[in-house]
Amino acid sequence: MLRGDHAFGAEVRGVDWSHPVPEEVVQQLVALQDKYAVLIFRSTGLDDTRHIAFTQQLGSQLEVNPFYAGKQNDRVGIDELWDVSNIELDGSLVKPNSRRWHHSLGNALWHTDSSYHQQRSKYSLLLSHGNPKRGGFYTHFADTRRAYADLPAERQQQLAETIVEHDLWHSRALGSPTVYKSPSVEERAKKPPAYHQLVQKAPNGRDTMYLAAHAKRIVGLDTKYASKRDSATELVGDGEDMTASQALIWELIEHCTQPEYVFSMEWLDGGDMVWWDNRQCMHRANPYTTEMTARDVRRSTVVDDGPNAWGVSAS
Image (cartoon, rainbow, N blue to C red; front, side, top):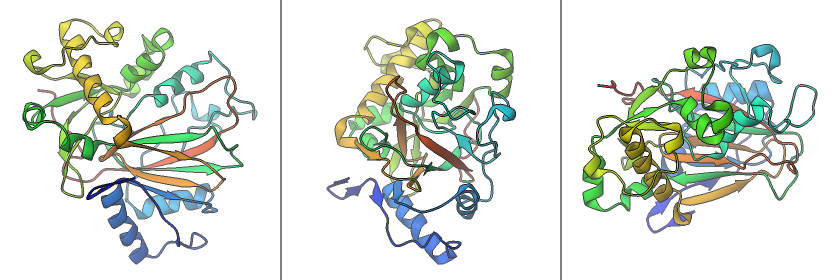
């Protein structure tokens, strides 16, 4: 998507995926990534092993899947990959109203991968397997750089020092308030909240917003700067601070996800891959439905090692 002097999202051709990608090509791709934030590659022919190997060329530390439901219940069972498909161990589609179905509902909200980690993620690489049916399988991306640039200067100044609490279980409760209103003790222990600056520098030097449905609370919110809209998420909060925080967070998410900042990638074939920078954009998946067809997609994630990688203190 091109808009004036700004570009967001690019489809890249000409990479030979049959061999390890040469370092000079990797550096060219990183330069494109810094500019476009989302890179799409078609029919790569990559398998799990080469998917991981390419991801390791982009960063020395990859996120390890915590296997919330137990590694023995994971269809892929590889530490460096997340099975974000809609396929069960026996090959059937995920059952409506199962815990996995409800866990997935948070993926249909606009979010940034792993913003709920205190050491956040940098890149995500999502690879398709099998033969996806065309016409209903998309991933959507929103440009938080341009969205921030288009905010009024006064609003930018108000947001400049904002710190946000991110919580995985908050977004899961938004997606499925009945099942995830009270995460289990084991789930809560595996993933406590994290804290990050809202306004940060993107690799291209522009200011951007680090924002997600995982964003739960604005630390020390000055309510005179908060949105006056009613919060649709009050049911998962507690008190005025939470209500005001959610109102502001969702005002900003709605601003970032206006059509002029968004494009949608259709998954066409097995081997299609999309690589995005979590520091420069948000994304979401199509929600599960009872009419959906099989979506076999697996994600690897590079841990951030930059100046803002470890977020900030809650105080």
